[in-house]
Length: 137
Image (cartoon, rainbow, N blue to C red; front, side, top):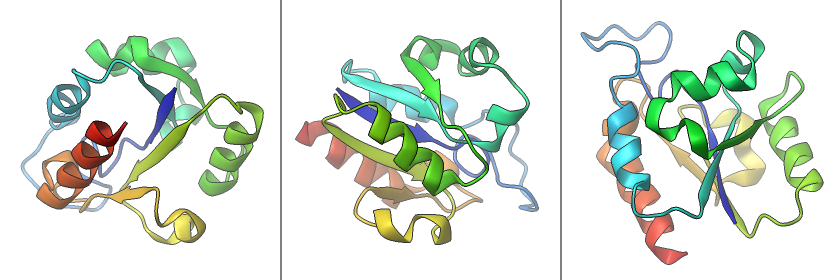
């Protein structure tokens, strides 16, 4: 099983404080299209949205990607939450972290797919890295 640790702000829509004409979830279809042919990839939410919504609500927010959501990280630190989740799920063969921030993930630089917070999943470099990982598995 492969896992994609997913942030929302700056990935599925513009990040906080970024002035754009985009709406919430505007780049969700881009992620859905990229994952469509890769049924082995599951999603774990590490977005701060996990503090406001339960797992079923997060699935609903992600629409067609909702059935892929197998969990959410716990704890205030995103890196620590990912590391803890991975330690509790040794069946994960490979993973990537999709986020618009670099700093929290210094020890996961090889697994980080960073998006420009103004472009999210429409960021050509991030989309290229995601697709390269998807076809490698």
